[in-house]
Image (cartoon, rainbow, N blue to C red):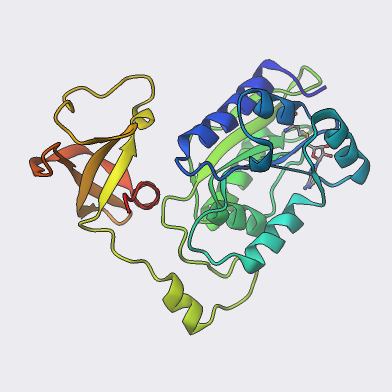
Length: 276
Ligand SMILES: C[S@@+](CC[C@H](N)C(=O)[O-])C[C@H]1O[C@@H](n2cnc3c(N)ncnc32)[C@H](O)[C@@H]1O
C-alpha cells in the first residue's frame, strides 16, 4: 500500500544509514501491516535482532509478525522513545536510525529531541494534506531547532500513497556527542549522572575512519596510511569550531603525518570511530 518510488528510496536510505553506522545499532521505525519496510530490511541483510518496528495498533503488530517474523511493539512511538529515554544512560546512541514515517503534519518536539539524542540520524515524514507546504516545513524546522538538531538535506515534498504530492520528508541529526542526557522529558539530572556523562576530550585519540565514509569514491593519496580492516587511521589533533576535529593521518609505520587533513570530523563520528 505504501510502496512508491520515494518510499522505496526512503527504505533504502534508512538501510544505508544502518550500514554507515560502524556499530550497526539498529533501526527504530514505524511499520505498516504488510511489514513492507521490515521485509525490505531483512532481504537487504539487516538481521531480525536489529529491527525495532512499532505501530500503535496491536492487530497491525500481529500482522507484521506473521508477514515477516519480526516482533513489532504495539505502542505510540512517542511512548517508546519516552520509555527508552528514561533508562538511557546517555553514553552511546541506541539506534543507527529512527524513522518516524508518519502521516501527521507535525512532530512532538520532546519526542524529536529524544530521538535525536538516542539515534545517530532521525528521518521524519510528514503530511502536507490541506496545509500550506511552507507552513508545515517552517513549523518542523522550528521543532528541529528547538530540539537542537540540524536538517541534513533539503525537505523534499513527494507523492504519497494517493499519488498526490502531499508528503514531505526530512533527514535530521544532532552533531554532538550523545553524552549530555538533557531535560527532554522534564526531569533534572543528578550531579552524579552529569559527572558520569561529562564529555571526555577526544584530542590526541586515534580514530579508524571507515572507507565507506567516502562512498564508492575511494580516497586517493592514502596508500601509506595505516589500514585497519576497512578503515584508515587518523589522530584527532585539534578542535575545529565547537563540534568538529582536525585530523592527521597515522602512517603504516606509526608516525603521524605532518600535514593536517583538509576535511574535519564531527564529534559524534569521532566518538563512534575511536580505535580503542
Ligand atoms: C506510513 S506507515 C509506515 C510505513 C513503513 N515505514 C513502510 O516503509 O512501509 C505508518 C504506520 O504507523 C502508524 N502510526 C502513525 N503514527 C504513529 C505513532 N505516533 N505511533 C505508532 N504508530 C503510528 C500508522 O497508523 C501506520 O500504520
